[in-house]
Amino acid sequence: MMKIPDWITPIYEQIKAEYPALLLPKAEKTNIKNWDFESLQLTNPIIYENKVPDVAAHLVDEADKNIIVVCDGAIVYKRLSVDFEDVIITTLQNALEQHEDLVKSYFGKVIPFNTNRLTALNFLNLNSGLFIYVPKNKVIGTPLNVIFIQEGRSLLNRNLIVANQSSQLEYIENYVNQSAAVINLCTEIIVGENAQLDFVAMDCFHKDVIAYECKRSAVEANGSLSLSHGALSDGNVVSENLVSLVGSGASAQVKSVAIAENAQKQNITVEVEHLAPHTAGDIINHGISKDEAQLTFNGIGRIHKGMRGSDAQQSSRVMILSEKARADANPLLLIEEYDVSAGHAAGVGKINEEQLYYLMSRGLTRREAESLIIHGFLMPFIKEIKNEAVQAEFVNVIERKIKA
Image (tube, rainbow, N blue to C red; front, side, top):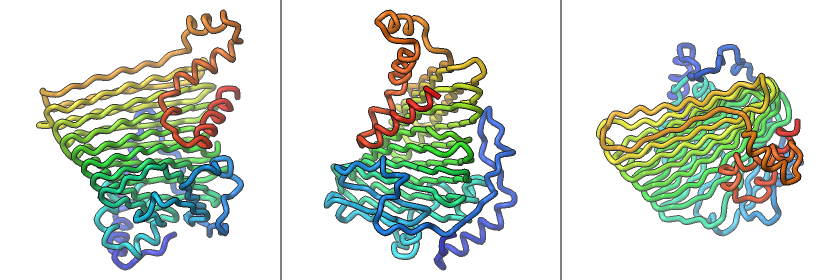
């Protein structure tokens, strides 16, 4: 548990009092009432001295200029180029104490601590997190690669990422663990006026992990957010991703790729909310469900009254690779304004037999043909990864899951 500074104490006590009455988040089509999110085992972190732990070595390319490795809440490796001069990158613990005025402006504003039972649980038991603050007009030309490692029994991580007015940042994050655990992740993202943030996230959790993920973003006037999420864990996962377009001309594209296998359950919700006129939101979900797994995509486009000239689009497609696998693609458009554009597409089905026949007629085996089709199906996410080591790992995980 993090040390709580004095200014946080009243908030902590308030959330602690509210906690018993708070409800679990809604996960349409998935019953999560019996998922044991609250069996936390908090341990002291293992301290590494400026070293990348072996479990994450394959995600680090020596050519990378900007890498941060966080293990159970502690920064254990850090290498940054001059591109990140004047950018604040520190642990959330340090930020709460040493950057109080900055953190107060944003902390808990995008994800209120009492949003649901699990966001409150995250706040009350925080043991990890980063604060990243990009100042006004700062354009960073090289990506930042952040790796979070969980080696204890429970990880409750909260990140706060602020891209100020007219700034640009490319951010890549990976979550890695290799044992049974409860994992609870909250990420608050603020994209300032005319700012641009490209955010790529990939998680690869152990089969005995129960995970809750909550990403919420606020995009101000003419700001742009590209958010790509690779859900490649082996355990049960509930993921919520909400983007609020709060300024005129704001835009967001959210891409999710998921592979569910064995008896795994993955429930992924993506919502883009239009709170200003002339905003644009695009949701793209692609997934694979195999064995006896259950994969659910919930896509929500919400345009409020008066938000004229806005555009809400979404597409969700899931490929089923076995008879017992389940999948749902649930599109929802909630439109309260006439002068808008909106549309959705959803599909769940098996691999196209005509495509298989075509490829096999060119000499490929059925397995090779299936693999090629699946790679093409997941390409919208793969091409977003600008880090070669991370992209290679993504492809390796896909290969392992397809061939298992």
